Structures are given as structure tokens and as C-alpha cells.
Amino acid sequence: MTTMQKLFTEVSQPVATGGNKVTIVGVGAVGMVCAYALLTERLTNELVLMDMVKDKLQGEMLDLQHGAAFLRNVSVKSSTDDYSLTKNSRIVIITAGARQREGESRLALVQRNTDIFKSIIPQIMKYNSDTILLVVSNPVDILTYVAWKLSGLPIHKVIGSGTNLDTSRFKFLISEKLNIAPSSCHGWIIGEHGDNSVPVWSSVNVSGVRLTEINPKIGTAEDEENWLQLHKEVVNSAYTIIKLKGYTSWAIGLSVADICRGLIRNNNNLYAVSTLVKGFHNIKEEVFLSLPAALGCNGITQVVNQKLTPSEVQQLQESARVIAEVQSGLNFDLKQ
Ligand code: NAD
Image 1 (cartoon, helix red, strand yellow):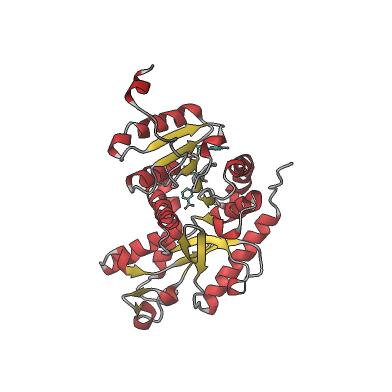
Image 2: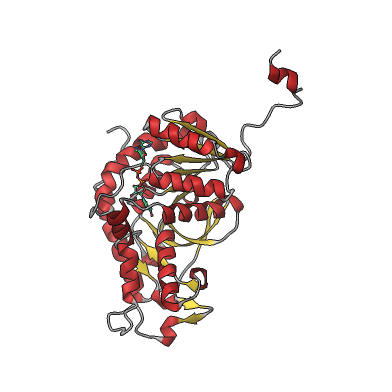
């Protein structure tokens, strides 16, 4: 008998998963902050990391495992190619892919990352027919559409991290201008994550006081206080940070963990996440864009029918048109 056999008397077989297992595909700058935030915020105690770069993957896994005793004994596993490890994941987060190069638009990344998705999604689905896919890789709205098509999952279970990050950047910048906490600044950035995102100036408010009532020109070029600049800064944030440190990671990792909190805790909180918007705001195209949506264990449960101005609707529709055009040129056929 081994020491282990002498030490224990088995009463029943342990279950395979505790129910909050999360897989992260891609352990780059973004994937690892997602992992760290999920573990330290105790949203999962079962993490699987997948990446194709063996040494880096193993190093990241070991480094996290060595902190397990500080994290209430979490389990962290990894593999380069054995997707059976991911079996029964509650959420699969995809951050794999090429990242933006300095000055490169998110749209230019699209086919490179679509090809990577073709190698990942079918493997995930083989072992996780009922999971929630949370796409982070850019261009996130298009890649969420690609993930939806490749996975065959119902629409409420394929979610893009979308403008949850842009909204957080917006709140931070408003908070700096008004000198109150970001969480007390209520405003939404919707639509496309990135260059064509839509700031909903018409509903920005602090404790119910809409800023348009105080400053009717807010968000327009005629506004003497130039609040418009805040949205420009939101749009330029990623470019600025990439120029300064090479990539963005902390805020996106926290944003993803925040979305996972909704999905794991079934909290019905509203998040600006990317979902199929055909039919909303008179959008005709089959595209994904961010709208405020409630999240629970089953994925997206409700989408808010925001009262938008004609100009805000027009911006969303224009984004939808551009994205549909890019999607039409995209090859996500698995056989090719
Ligand atoms: P990174 O280069 O540091 O990491 C990407 C990882 O993906 C690498 O470790 C790479 O080995 C892995 N990978 C590539 N192909 C793979 C495959 N087929 N299977 C498994 N792993 C694979 O990049 P990053 O900075 O972590 O960014 C990752 C993605 O997230 C990029 O597309 C980036 O543009 C995007 N991003 C999105 C947001 C957002 O708000 N949605 C914010 C920041 C970054």
C-alpha cells in the first residue's frame, strides 16, 4: 500500500468538476490578467489554460499553481493541444490571437484571428456542448460572430467582451472631470468596440441628473467644455497604451472578470457586451455589437431597449453596415 492508500479510506468518488470551471484559451498579456483576476476575485477555483506556446504556458501554469495555497486551493491545469482538459467548462474565454501592432486597426487583424478561431472553436465544442463562449480577441465584434457561426451555440451563449471596457474608460474619464467615483458616473458606450464606438451622451447621468439637461451641447462640437474629447480619449486609449507599453492588459482583464461575475453569480447585472443586434434599433444586418445586456448563468437574458437619439441610432447602423461588409469577405469555412 502507498502512503496515500494508508492515509485515506475512500467513501465516494470525487465529482469531476465543482461547477465553476473556466477555460482561458490564449495565455498572453490579456489571458493572464483574466486568469489572475478570476482567481483573486474567487470567481473560479478550477482554471484550465490553453496555448500553443508550450514553455510560456507551462511557466504561467506553474507560477499560478504556486500561489494556490493563498487562493483557497484552486486547481490550475494546462495543455497545448489536449482540449479534453477543458471538458464541462462553465465559461470558455478566448483571448488567443494576434494582437494589434502599433497603429494597426482592429479590423486589419480580422482574417488572421479568424483562422486561429477555426483551429480552436471546434475543439472546444467537442468537450463543451453547453458552455458559454466569451470572446475577447480583436476585432471582438466580428470574432464573436465567427465564434457563434463556428460553435453552433444558441445566441445567448456567445458573448463578446465588447464595449464593457470602453464604458469603464468612459466612466473613469467622466469621474476625473467631475471628481466623483467612476461607479457613480452612469453612462454607456455601445456599438462597436474600438474606433466607431457610440457614446450615449443622451443618457449620461449622475444620480439621475442627465448632463444633457445641464449642458444641452454636451458631446457635440459646439460644446465649449469639449466633453466630446472624452470619447476621443476612449477611442484612442488602446492606441496610446500600446504605444507606451506594447499591449493593454489590466483593464481588459478586470472587465472580463466583471463579465464572468455576472455569468457565474447569476447576478442579472447589466454589461455592455457584444451580442447579435439584428432587429435592434432597426439594424438589418446579422452582426454583433454591444448593447446593455443582463447576464446570468445562462448567458444573456435581456437586452435593454435604450431610447437613443436619431444620431446615435445612425452611428450604430453605420457600424453594422461596415462590419457586415467585412464579414462578407471573411473566410471562416472550416474546410478551406
Ligand atoms: P498576446 O500575443 O500576448 O497573446 C496571445 C496568445 O494567444 C499567445 O500566447 C499565443 O501563443 C496564443 N495563441 C495564438 N494562437 C493560438 C492558438 N491557435 N491556440 C491557442 N493559443 C493561441 O496578445 P494579447 O495582448 O494577450 O491579446 C490577445 C487578443 O486580445 C488580441 O486579439 C488583442 O487584440 C485582444 N484584446 C482585446 C481587447 C478587448 O477589449 N476586446 C483588449 C485588449 C486586447
